[in-house]
Image (cartoon, rainbow, N blue to C red):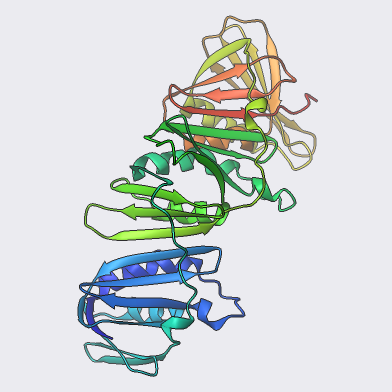
Length: 369
């Protein structure tokens, strides 16, 4: 293999893939990045056997071929180089030579044939949509993924492709976030699966505001192909979480007594200030609704108290409900709408946060002290 590549292209490719490489692996090949050169592209692939990322960048290939090199070493070298171009040559013992200006490196690698093969995906189960859409949907749901490993089916995002809709759901049992978008889903492409939190984090990092994403899936794997307008492409392949996702529909209240419009920024900052006066023992903020008025109070004996009042449009009966402030702050942070709606039944029923758009968030109340 022999090629010349721009430093920024190689650096961008390595940055896209190297995150999934684990530093504590017993298989040496998993510390390496697979480099495959053909025509005018260099394809870089890294995996931890759960998540695989492939990125293709432009290169001037004199002799096609493939090898693997330790990804952290290669990235360390490329990052420190100061010249714009890098020459790369690989001999038959998988030793990669790098030349750039007056710098020269030799890195020992392993054969490409040792690298785990990529799974194959059929063309029938797939959907395509703008990257910007799925990026927004992940932002509105990912924060609600459970970190409790004993309930592993909740350690990811549930994706449903049904009835011309892509629906994303995340819950940890105490709150639930749901976002959906209309997507062209063919009869054959319908299905449901759970993608792990690690894959969600990688997608959040790699998704752009422009370009398209194509989603394909099988029984136990999903592939996300990201293409941008410049022609560079990133492929994320992930194992799926096995098991049945709980029926999230039954947690969403069917009715509501009060629907209160709130200015998102104002509500968010008032909650943040009140949260300062909570403690681990008493981690709740009380929302008291009166005529055209919302009082937000936090009171913990060992810290002190906070009280905020907001002028709101409210004509209902006086009502108070308490929430874990973090559970209300997170969705407010993830949204960009000026106005949000809080739907309430009584102090013991879950509250529902909505916007004028395809999003809803259910949060369980806390006992009023």
